[in-house]
Image (cartoon, rainbow, N blue to C red; front, side, top):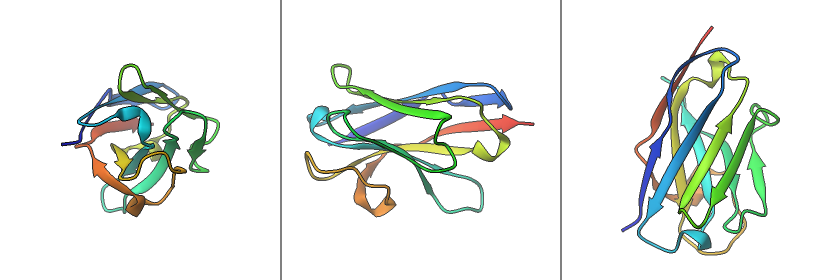
Length: 126
């Protein structure tokens, strides 16, 4: 059974940084793409970033490009999201997710991801 556990969220001020982690278990981590999504209260879940199974390809939402960096350590079965220059609009519950099929191109679509973590809260005050 695939399990994803996020950590690293918190309350920060605008301009601060945070690094989120997502530890995966239950299958061969290095064969699958990983994505980060977020959801603000009253809003739909939205794509933030994704990294391909081999780490060679990354995707970003326009709103975070240049500020956030997604990476993975396949030896540790962990994916990271480094978030710099945080803004109040970055506030939300951040989820990591992984897809069903091995060694395919990563996607920005929520429906492309099958397994989800419980989320970690990020709150940015102005």
